[in-house]
Figure 1: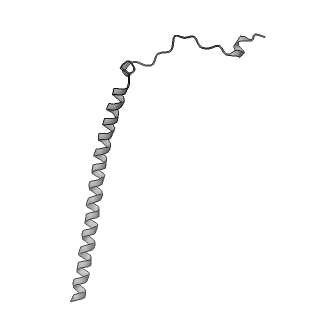
Figure 2 (figure 1 turned 135 degrees about the horizontal axis):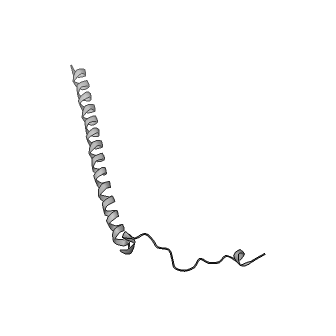
Figure 3 (figure 1 turned 120 degrees about the vertical axis):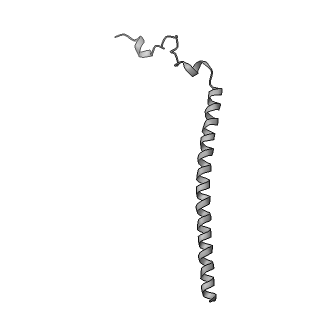
Length: 77
């Protein structure tokens, strides 16, 4: 009888530990997904605040300075 009781306790303990591990895994996965999304939104907000307003809606324009002349372009043969 003592053997049967000990094996039942072992099965109960093993099933309780397995259930706890499963619940912790699912909870941690859900929380990490929510935190990851929240962190991405915060990072995007910070990037928008750090950018100058002109670059938000306009494509970068080319400089009006002429391109530099390379030395080999000055030599004529």
